[in-house]
Image (cartoon, rainbow, N blue to C red; front, side, top):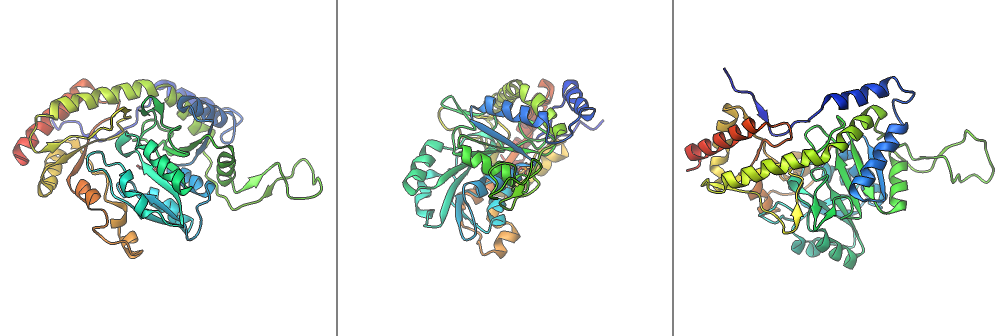
Length: 382
Ligand SMILES: Cc1ncc(COP(=O)(O)O)c(C=O)c1O
């Protein structure tokens, strides 16, 4: 009998999540109702950020966050390319340009030492990606940002619940974007959020997600009537529904147990693979407790990566690769970015393989991943 396919990531949805969702279906609000407000309150409480706004995806959250800090046509954001295309795309939506700087080769996180040289008079923000669930070095990034009077944005699609020296994701950068896609730390199907302590940024995000409409602070000199709302800026429909927020709120209650399971699996992988030759394990920043969205090993020899990947897939271990450096996508190449721009990110990509890690993996599943990866590494990488 073929063994069960173990994907690299998978949602964990239980009966109480389903019950929470079903309850909203017979309530008065399917969208823009009390579950939205309650989920936002819960996200702010979990992270320690003063404000949370939920949006239809992390892509929407990044778009709104960049717009809210003033990124516009002709501007630049400084970011790293080891990420999903959305981090760069959200700048392109606004007519801005991502400037890519290279990563720390051990962690895959943006290397603060390279940022100064990339900053110009057009830079509006430094955008760090918490690759695989580990917070970037926001203390260093904030120091650089303060010198140049730019904002720090965290693309925390991978890192809800992670901490750095005890401080939570959501409080480390000026603005933080989360993802609730099913493979992420918690899910709402599709979904995302912006966290910030800045009340002005928060209110601009709220406007941006709903067509730029405002109910108060009209520019009219007279009182038109109690029905009146007006559009003061160009926004989108980036709202998240009450149905989704009910799922999100139920999921968020389980975040501590999800994280504990991810951390236990990562620690088993660390100890089991440390003696497997041909494999490099994920590097850790001191003081950081990652959320372990991904567990990414690197093969020593890039030419063996494909054979390693395919052998694992044949044995139903659903490995994946995160990520092709953003500027190597043909669309970015057409914009004039050239291959070789960030050699460390290219080397990272060429050797990376993400192993299955999610709370629903049983002890038996984890043992199977460890056994199979060890055996395949011996066959293919030795
Ligand atoms: C680092 C990163 N940023 C942004 C996104 C976009 O998230 P979403 O699918 O919620 O729009 C992803 C999704 O995979 C991601 O991994």
